[in-house]
Amino acid sequence: MNVIRKRVESRTSSFLIVLAFATTLPLARGDDAPSKDQARVIAFHGYTQAIELKRGTARAVLTPQAGGRVLTFSVAGQDAMFLDEHEMNWQPGKPGSISAGRFDYGPELTVIPHPKIWSGEWTGEITGAYSAKLTSPRDEAAGMQLVREFSLVERNKTVRLTCQQTMINISKEVREVCYWGRSFSPGGGICLIPLGDRPSRFPSKYAMYEESAVINVRNMDEKIRERDGFLEILAPPRKPKLGFDSQAGWLGYLMPNGSLFVKRFTTYPDRVYSEAAGLTLSVWYPTGPRIELEPIGPRERLRPGESAAFTEEWWLLKFPFPKEGEQIDLKELSERVTEQTTN
Image (cartoon, rainbow, N blue to C red; front, side):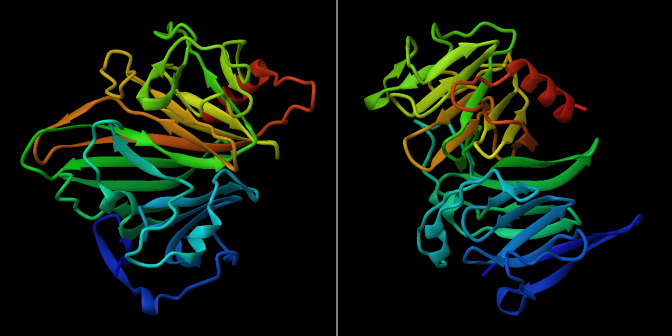
């Protein structure tokens, strides 16, 4: 059973206060609103040890109980996550739906399976008023352990959620891995991939994964168009899994409710990316209720005991969804993203 700890820091020392086991934690309903911003443990969506972070109108709820994830990330009540209702039936030790703010590591086609890390029970720790840390079990078969640190950070009247994953080689052999974000958002929106100022290796500027892991780099899909320095994924394309080699370091997902979900991450033009097509970013957009937005990190060659970290930063901004027959003003959108997420 997980124990959630709260770290209290002074100028000269720090110590841990054990909050308690899950059976004795002071729980609140997931929709309760405390009188002030303060990280706390709550019951949420079937999970008994969720950690809630709040800062102004921004809210993130994390779970250490099944895969170390973000269950919700919202601003002013608008949520960027798709959380499967089937998770309400979660039971300890039984595999179930893993949705919402997922993270992983790859390379996808060659990585050692790691179910203990993907969906097993993690430990959670409150590390500050707006921050928490989730730590995976040691997966001896895969030779890896992960630590994820989350924080709500306010700057220039906007709040972002920082999501840092540290990958630790606990084996006695060298491990080559790469960061892989795998979060779900509600479907029905428009995904925006900035192309940046470096030419793509792909003739169509994206790769489409066909059956049997065939990667098609010459595509003409009516649901994907290039315009004003962006690729716009307007709806589910012919095949749902797409890959990109953009070095722009961000993507946007505009939802019908007028919320623009922005992910920023560092890219490394001179490093090796170890996914099969050398991707910095992937999108999975099937027909249905969700889309998967997947920043990918460069190859990390870890000797025994070594670690490497990768960070995504998330924002939810306001931006109008185009009416039928209209187009997104991509110049205005790009300027707003730059103004609100780079200062």
